[in-house]
Length: 119
Image (cartoon, rainbow, N blue to C red; front, side):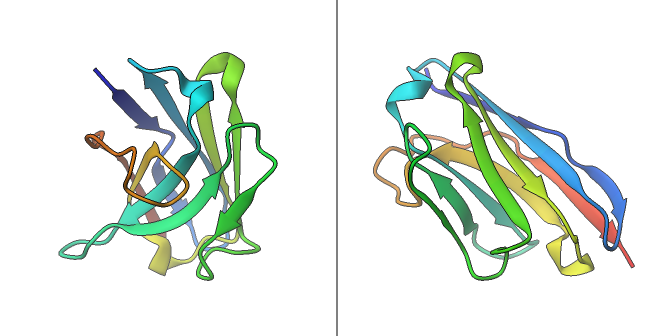
């Protein structure tokens, strides 16, 4: 059973930084591209960033390009999202999942991790 556990969220001031982690289990992590998403209250999840299996291809949503950095450690079955220059508009619940920003490998969602950016 695919299990994804996001962590690292919290409260940060505007302009600050956070690093999120996503631990994957129940599947061979190194076989899948991975992506980060976020969800604002009452809205659909939106794509943020994706990374290929070995990290040689990366893409970002325009809203986070230049501020967020996605990375992965296949030896640790872990995906990361370094978030810099955070803004109050980045306040959301952040999720990870399999795939390069598409839904073909998504079976379920974890609980996510809340990021709150104060002004």
